[in-house]
Length: 230
Image (tube, rainbow, N blue to C red):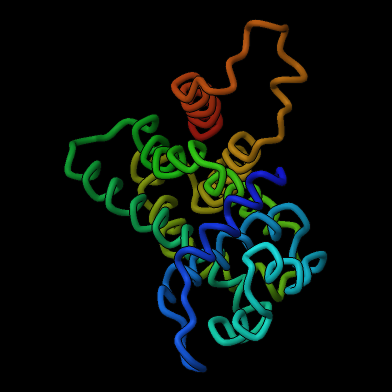
């Protein structure tokens, strides 16, 4: 992060937080969010093992003791960072999917879009992009960290997508449906997580990193092709 952004963030924390004696600081929810924001960026850049609570405390302009007060441990903080956004994404996916199921014979492309669209808005902000990198990185974290978090956040909604896709594509076996939803997850994690691969590959002038409509159209068509394959 640039020094100017770090300074601006620390300044906002100082303005929001006033200590009134030895008790809990005023503006506590603001302080908690500042800790989560700082942790989100650092965890996304360095991973769980590579991140020290001291770095997060320095970035958020708080003490490590205050982080422990709010989150208990490094894992408690990591869990709070991940679930803060992932549970919202999962809930919105289920709501969109439920609405889509009210239609008769929804298209596979529409099912895919209910999966992708709740994540698109995250690409519009610095913190949202940090979360997308963190989410992609989660799959490389040790199983004792990643499995429980992934299951807590997305287990239920992922199983719903398997069921709905099998209904839309009745020739798919349960095993094939699970494989293809897994590939669908991997595709969007890579495509949405700021790998800058397209900027390197595409001829200059053809690719617009900010063209969200093109992004979702390309990813949707790719996913539908795989899901509907014989």
